[in-house]
Length: 78
Image 1: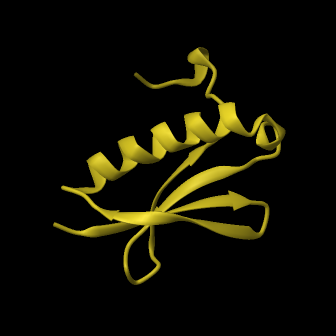
Image 2: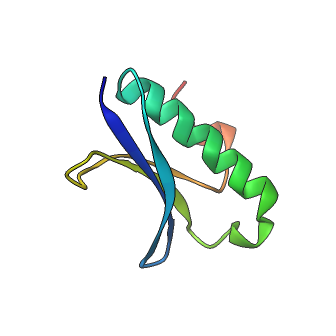
Image 3: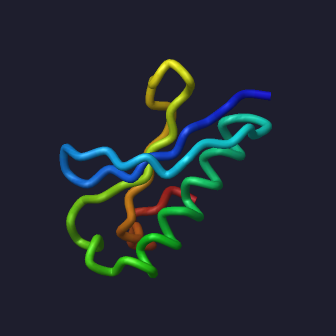
């Protein structure tokens, strides 16, 4: 199983949020979505600043990114 790293992206600043071994990128992206929701609630000052949570692999390649600000329902594709 691969190792994934999670970062909080605030402008040009990258803040490491830790890493974990997970099944695949689908599980890692779900965890990133959860982390973004949690950070948005715990740190409301990060809302409306374009912050995001990103997932990277051990080679620092970005695999997924999700905004802290919720996506309006009219913009969702599901």
